[in-house]
Image 1 (tube, rainbow, N blue to C red):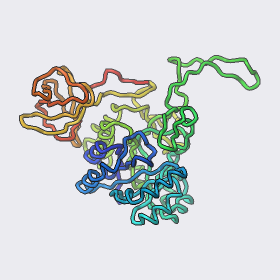
Image 2: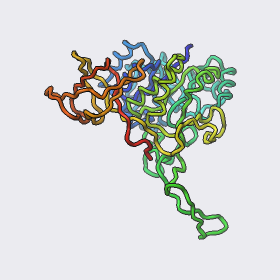
Image 3: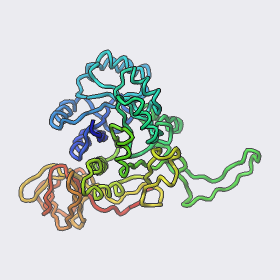
Image 4: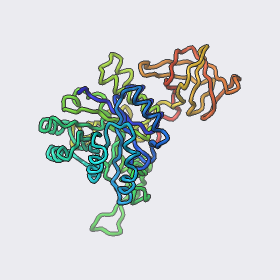
Length: 409
């Protein structure tokens, strides 16, 4: 099978964006059973629209049902079997083995994909899941390229998928209880508070044999994020991923912005297709909000090894070069476009526009019109805007401007 690009769809808008910007498939969650409980996810009221999008695009849709189920949640799952079966999903992503019998009994035509939460990183485990009826394994993020190749050689008929871009959990394949311990919000129930990415102040340490004798710690900027992992980025290693035997490359980010979904999906699409302008699209990966990049465990058992660092900046925190301003919602006559405004747009901004196959357009001589058709100096989020520009835009194009804040702690 051709190498699949799998993008996140936290809501309807992100689903449309991911498909428009080059995804072969999208993964999404239902309201009740997803590990990204705050992603928006999908409800029954959106079923018809999801069906329409799938029919028109022909893309595959995978439902992430990857929480660890409690007894009352299992009961709710069975009570919702008809509703779940009505969705046009090609596969269900699960980590709780208790769901296998449910899907084989009520939706035997649907494929089962094993979630990365199951921590599968060896061929014996892959064979065991194969016997249970799984079609695809989303390997644990601890798997190296060498291990992936050996697994594929030993179980060639099993589809293998890996995360290749985005945030990585500091716990083993995401099995973390830190959030639940500190905030009462369980990562394994889809409500992670990302406590590993908080800023922790360290003042002193105590040696075991010297109780009460505290030794001060000196750290730059008066804090250190002691638990936070870097973000994963494998954009420069598409061929190695393919040669290792992967069938699907997965982008993390159901809770990220529409802008993030667009530029990351687009960059990997162009890299997979070996587009002549792929480097122009890759640049956006370093300009969208992200932590320092790494190649994770793919080339080393030590994911924090500095040799795996692929970031441009040495400063710690979230790097962000652009502010997402909105998307083109409708194309009108006379170079007018209706904009879905996400952040304030001012008449003196230098606007940039990007599209699925357009690296960059820019304009500083545009005009802004409000709902009454009056020309205005600025428009805020949530307000109607018609933008007049000489740039040839299309529905779904994205507006942005350079961010004043480059590093966000």
